[in-house]
Image 1 (spheres, rainbow, N blue to C red):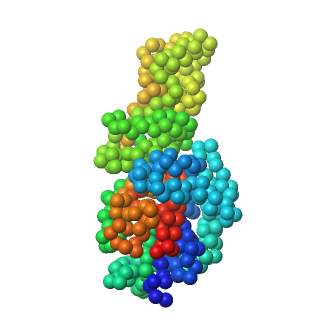
Image 2: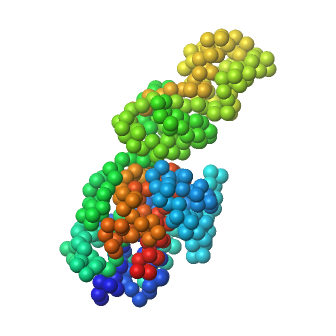
Image 3: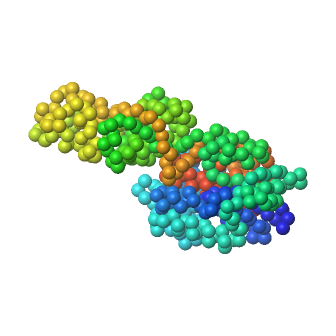
Length: 410
């Protein structure tokens, strides 16, 4: 088969599969190869969302959707007007996979199993004739004088193609972008995004597994501020609010070497005045009740007990005997607890990186390279990353769909 009849896609993840299916469906007379260097396809799909696969997010207005991307917001405006979250939902439902929306907007298959998504994608790829290869990757790619590419594969073989799509995932290391660099592209330095915080405070270590449904976290000296669920872990803090803070602050926090103070407002709807009013009401309505056993504003009991202790309030203190200094310290802790962050851990369900192929070098109408004709990009190899909640998969579906259709047209 001549190179003009072959299209090669490197990377067997969400973006690569979506591109391969779209391309093969549009040009059934051409050969579409999908190469995956690992032993399994769609490994990130399999483990995401705790094995349930957070397919996308129920945000169906394209411009609003773009605001969920710390890197790539402007670049994604046009692509999301062509293929956005509602199109992803329709695509899967047309192929027998129904999605459900959870309270926070995340969308999962109704089966609560990522295998449902994997089975669908594999079935569709086989139906439209995509040639699937595992344990095979591209070692080198060279442009041909008359157009197209000569590819050297990891198994020692070689192949030619007219168009090449790189969808090899996030640049967790600089070497991950070496193919793109060899074809003239610039790689924005990769740094972690979506990570949890290490906090060594002994009192916090007493609360592993504790979840606060609504808290506000911020980093003094920056504009970084997020509100949402926070989870206390064995090593520190996680949860959606922390992960979003890490995404928006990826480069700032890397510059701080992941050591910085973190402020937490445990009751975002309560200011100091409202807390003082609540204390006074407790003195009147529950004078004999222990302060340590009386959480404010739905705060988890274990957390409330630790904050009371941290405020220097004796465990046998009752509301009627709560001293003014203790009340003031407790108010400060409720409105702004300061915790020293000493490091990070990657979020295993996401392991997203900030960095990748420079966006101005790619035409987002087609996902084709502006510097190397016939070369296309999709997914996290681009310098695009979203906050947690299904947004990174949506960028993969969108860029894969656009690239696949564009390769079919050219």
